[in-house]
Length: 337
Image 1 (spheres, rainbow, N blue to C red):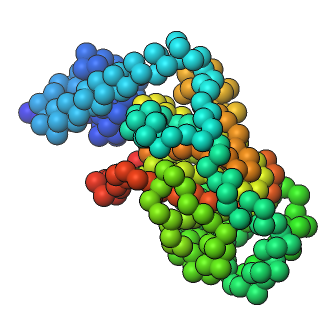
Image 2: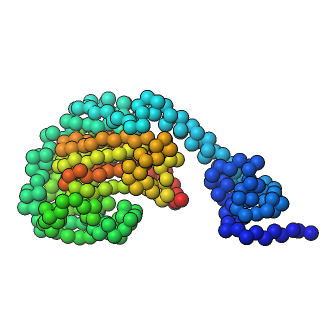
Image 3: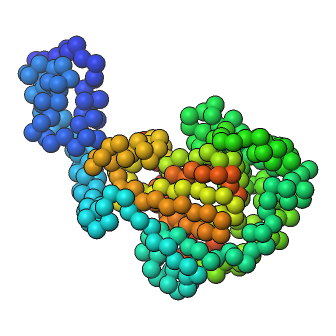
């Protein structure tokens, strides 16, 4: 005779097992999980024993163990880095870097570096003021992210927040705004803006680390003080540079991804660097630097980063390095959590 147990529990049997797998529960503690969920000891022992015979549970447990092993290995890198640099790691600064050194010491080692002296020769450095841009591009229709504060997940919902305005209206909004995260022209608007802003590309020169720059190679960023790009990682190596204003960039190494609360695609639920710092030793290590006019930051693929504008900013980003940068083709696009 089959005995059926009924329990007054908020969690069903499958959910108890699913949580046990996700949280890496040892098999000898599985029955205790059922007891904690409201099952009596006899029922708990029965369900735990039944799970041991389930091939799906066995496969899930094997996968859980593999993930735990991987996280253990990656955590070694975290501990070694922390023992060398402490919780707040410094990003090196190199002026006029030789391309061979950049690729050997940073690009191929996936190490961030702040770079100066790359774009001093750009006409944009002396020309791109609000007055100049309003005069040259005033009647041009551009696209930006608008009403960002209406959505907590504004970065994930970026396609829903696209707005079209004239460049003159955009500049007027910047002039009357001290601090705001409500509107921002970002790389997510590049499909429209690369063509719309084409007259500005004459003021953009070459960069020694990149393939010869063409009009469609760069992504344009512009917004008021206070704009924020929340924690996420990119699917390519990126070169982020500033023409006007300063940004603070906070980074977390990819080997700490298990601590980054990755909930959807390449995004994190951490709200700010301060929220991570408040976790003490339980939070990931932070790498942080500021970049200002004429300075650039190499953001290696997979590195988590959070970007805050400390002033009104104009910047660009590039991915057309003189080396392989195709890491998105094999990205598991259906990954979700």
